[in-house]
Length: 291
Length: 342
Image (cartoon, rainbow over all chains, first blue to last red; front, side, top):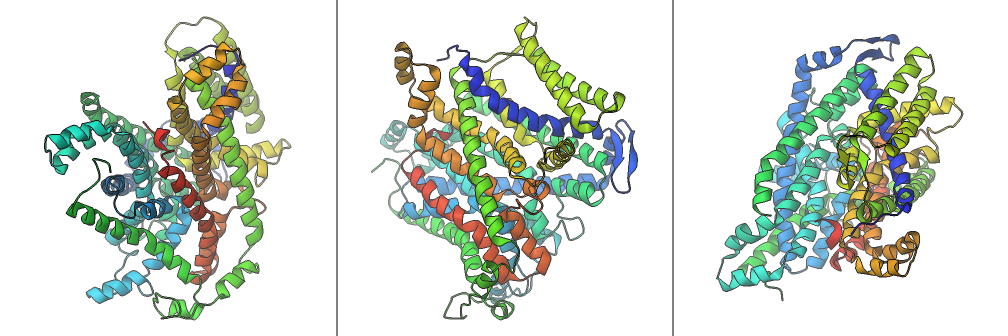
């Protein structure tokens, strides 16, 4: 039902104004500076360069490297989060013994500050004093370079992402599972469908819309990853774990190269938009099939 | 017992999997908790796992933290609490109102009006800054006011072209989250500095930080609350409308009390977001209104790997959220978050 009443403007304007004020300035500012050559240190007068910043970035191998690293981290982390999160949500929904405790415990990581998480991860992954090293030594691998060798470091960042954000997937998918109607499962049980068949025939298709939304949110948020990497590896060794946001940070606040940074952030935005559009386009036929 | 409950062996496999995941989830938290009670020597001497058995707990890290040797700890905690609570309260209030309006009323916005707003805002800023020689701050304010006035005025006129509806407006709100936060944070810092030159100090003030957090929480609040309101039965409101109860009383007297669980959940999710936020706090505060994540991150860069102190500081940031997780899961169990997504 919708109705008309002038009071609706009173309801919506505060939110609209606040978001407008705070979003239009970053937009105007960064879009205009992205077409200029603007440095704060050393201060040089701004100069219009058109698409110069963009062209320079697209030719910079570092940009492509950083975009690739970010994509690897985002896609692997989100895939793991989704698989583990779905499995845990199914178990909780099926009244696994002790699910009350599990629910509180599984929620926790999501609420811990990413900065704190990264600091804890650094302690645990410490190659000499950390508990993980102790464990690996028992297995016969001592002093592994968890944070100082590219493959290990990317793996470590992905594990931290999975640790922190799987709870979000669990929370959302569990809420979705609880809304599924019981009668479909009763019918399937009468037909002697195995749990495996029930999952692929009923649960998964009916959960598809929520799954798509959850993965979409996680993917976009993962691309913005910054504080975790910043604290854990600082982008190192070299630039091998540097992500897009960290690259922007280095350019903007170490080198104060503002035009370049702004152009970078718009490329970043375009990049995310393309991934989002492609993702939704690929999944659309499946979504409509199951409607 | 539900038809979907596991039977036989599957139950125990599921339990084993859950226990494994629980161990993975809890170990880091357990580790940070025991490390905060280790003495400096106990940390450097290699990993130890169980208090009183393989190491002797010590309160030295906590003493240092609470006596203020590690930075303005009390101030930071109080600042974090005040900003967190008020920003999430404001965002929940303002966002719920907007979400309710977007669920129950029709909004129409001409595409041309929206375009006009963007063009005038951009053009006005560029003209003011480049041609009229105004500073960035004033030219932005003038451009914004002009754009808004023109847009509101133009919505009175019948413009041709496509019309944007409620779902487009919701999408616009949510899409604000896609913008890379690093740019928004830096641009906001510049905007605050410019406004500071006009006489309103916003950098490192309560108002500046809270305002930024309210604005960046609103998209989440609107998105979550819209689903809660959509799940409410409309009949109650219709009955009230028949009795000529004004809309604002329907909202405050009927709708809000009915959606209390949703409001609490949204409030807590927003609070967690604000409490843990790092980037905006880094740019928009310097001393007086610094928040906990900044203090925690600073522990590492100032003194190096003093894990006992870092752990104690991290725990202070974590514990309030742990308490909240308990409350949130209570809500979850009673099925109150069901309407949160669809």
